[in-house]
Every structure is written in C-alpha cells, then in structure tokens.
Amino acid sequence: MKTLFTSEAISKDGRSGTLQSPDGLLDVALGNPLEAGIEKRGPNPELLFAGAYSACYHGSLVNAARRMGITIDGSTVRALVSLVEDDHDGYALAVEMHALLPGVEPDLAMRIMEAANQTCPYSKALRGEATFTLVVDSKPPQLA
Image 1 (cartoon, helix red, strand yellow):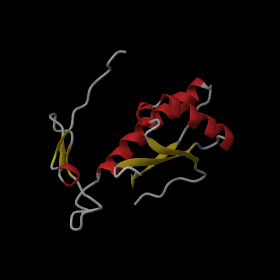
Image 2 (spheres, rainbow, N blue to C red):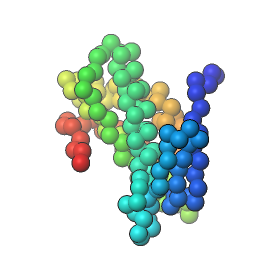
Image 3 (cartoon, rainbow, N blue to C red):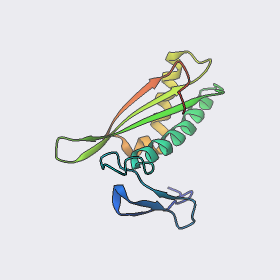
Image 4 (cartoon, one colour):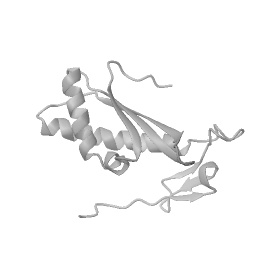
C-alpha cells in the first residue's frame, strides 16, 4: 500500500471544543447540538464528516461512472450523517448518501452509486460499523 498524503487535525475539548490543523487550513470552533448554548456556535463533528464524506464519495462516483464508460455532468452528492445510540451504551453513525446524476436512468445511477461505495475510502472505513443507505435523487438539494 502506498501513502498518497496524510492530513492532520488536532481536537481540543472534545465535541464542544475546537479543531485545528498545524498548517492553519482548519481552525474551527465546534457546535454541539446536544449542548444548550453552543449548538449553533459552529459545525458539529458529524457535519464536518458529512462534508468530507460527500466530497470523497462524489470523487469515487465520478470515477465509477468513468470506468463504466459514462460521463456525468452537473452531479451532486448529499450526505446525511446521524449520531445514533447503539445497543451497547455507545454511539454509532448512520449515513444516507444521496446522488443526483442528471440524464442517467435511476437503475444505472444506483449501479454507479454501488460501485462508488465499493471504492470510496470513507465507505470502506465505515463498512460493517455504520448504517448506510444509498438514494438516487430526482431533483437538486436545497441550499440556504
């Protein structure tokens, strides 16, 4: 296995604290939806994970389509990441990954999504440890 690059982030004070990277590209105060008063102070860890996962999965989606000989233009990927309590007094993630592939029939879009799910490093890391659902969207997501 060949390492392509390594990213580093440093957390202080856990879910209600801060995240920083030594290079200064990341410097954020976290919000915590479970703690009154700071729920909207900044992004929560699951929001950051959803953003990173959607970008990574989107890259895998484009690559999977290309390997199938399909060009996709104007695609969007939306990740919903939920923090859930498990049955062992711990926590887990539930992920719902949506993709909009304009001009691609839903059955083919699902096959592309499934192929992307097999190669995406985030999907591989979560395999067997998170609830995961793939959804083909028929209209673009709403942004604020």
